[in-house]
Length: 184
Image 1 (cartoon, rainbow, N blue to C red):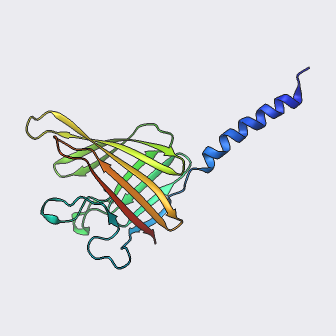
Image 2 (spheres, one colour):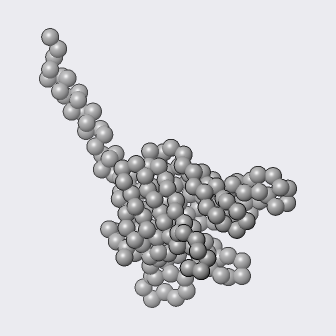
Image 3 (cartoon, rainbow, N blue to C red):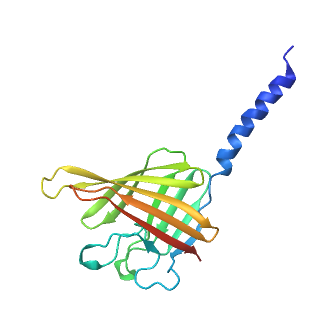
């Protein structure tokens, strides 16, 4: 005859070890717009940004504003309008699996289709999305890649922070930005 109290204790402990991980998963769902810091002028919501050539601002989170995030137990989707209405292009949509498995997103940009391979992993209440952007080296015509890491966190239920680190490409320096969004 099995020892039931021990079996029940083991099952209870197993259930407790799974609960904190599930509870730590933040829900980033909502419609978010880049926030302007109080009393600040210039580009809103971007601290520590590296300017683009010609002083035209920075690349921010890489997603634009406003963004719409939908999330369920298995995936996070980020969608935003990139093209003008007259371009007759749909909003850009990026889907990330929340179990750490690789996802691929393809978008029509510039000279054609661009493919991005991403993984999303949890670090407590933060979500880290690591994306490899593949492209052709214009000097050699050979394939090249650039890594972008975006860390999503909530400062409050209505404040989303996206910290983005872009690896240096072709010997250039890495860049980092912090973009703050407010929930609409």
